[in-house]
Image (cartoon, rainbow, N blue to C red; front, side, top):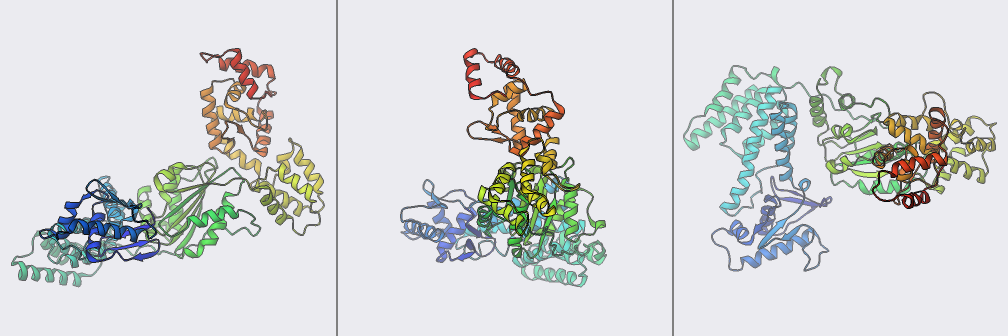
Length: 636
């Protein structure tokens, strides 16, 4: 549905991708505009005939409508076969229905913004209401439908949309003048006054907006013009709205001091972290991201994966590849969702406003006001936002820019399905690199080193690091920093489960696997943390839910909840066959915690006793059931 985009709030225009198309002869264009105006509601054949021809339709009107429909389908989808209705224009009873999607038709976006604006007014948030009003007004380019209406009924359909534009202009001007932002509505109110030369509330709004932006002389000229026009064409004097607007200008009740100060400058921030010079692999992931980045609307991509897998490195590499598409700015913010105290939405908005040139003294106090300012400053901008280490969708949603030409990249340890469901985000899981890519990554780190390991030793190191990019980078860094360090000695350290994480430790302040895993572990509930430690005693090939319940000595339902929490924290991997596994380095970390916090690993007898207690809750089963469970899961 996103391949087509329509505009009817002005002359009819529509595009397939980036190519503007011709909708055909006049009456065919009229039919298309009427179907779009119906907002995906079906229109019957007789209704369409009445709208197009009104009182004098030709005898072949039904066939003409069918012909126009076929013509539009071929314009929408040139490869369509003769009898195929395609993806957009459907037969519905004795009529037709056009389905184009909310974001693809300016009229539907206009109505959505109006609804949000009125909601902002009702909630007492004028800044937010004005942001939505200006978004709606910006969509209008002239009289709805252009000049395609040849019947009174069709004209009435389009006139209704023009009236909504006029009402929205008046409401937006009142708010804009009251909160000191009149310049933002001036172009829209000028257009409305041009479209409706005798609409008194619109012209009163024009007079008021001109005065509020410091144009007193122009405001009085506008008043005199509409007063003379009313007298010449209608023989009436100005009504209360115009008289009040004139009085406010003459008494300077609307003075330039009440108008908006110049909006904060909008610099072109370039905050992306440096691209990694030793970047390797990820060609498939970059190709996928390239495929998503076609300019068909705002792009939101949320990359998830375990700690150290290279989500941020991949996001930064892609951001630099496409940065030239975003001349209005490239923003970056670490949301610290992997830490004990993540950045709040309010603080994140403050940082982004600073980056967009807003002085500290001008940043609003409330989160809603900051959100309104952020959306205003990013409206219609070609801007890229990279949000690292998000914890949840609610932390990210207020930070999405208000622009159809924007791209937002998000990294998180857990998937963010809420962003996909409600914000149209693409979810992309970043997995461990395969063996060739991991070898390329390590080889780039080892290039030119005198103590470079032999191929067999390097492959063993890769496997002992579980192909985790963070660990491989540290292996390369250790060999580079300590030229006397033998690769065989380092490999021996990695083979020792008790020393493996210490072999991958770095200096204070830098992230290593143990530190990265600890941030995820500290966010777990007590029960899930305990189960995580116990999982270090299970088979590397995986363990199932019943075995986990027996190991922890608790019921299956609670165990499922805890496993779900561990999977969401990217500490445990769930497989399609019901197994749960730990990455080798995460298993080593869990083992360190187990040896520090818990008793000795449970014996087989202890596990069997615990499994009996778990299975006691089953109404059926007994020894046969227990045998099947023990047979499925090895006991450690």
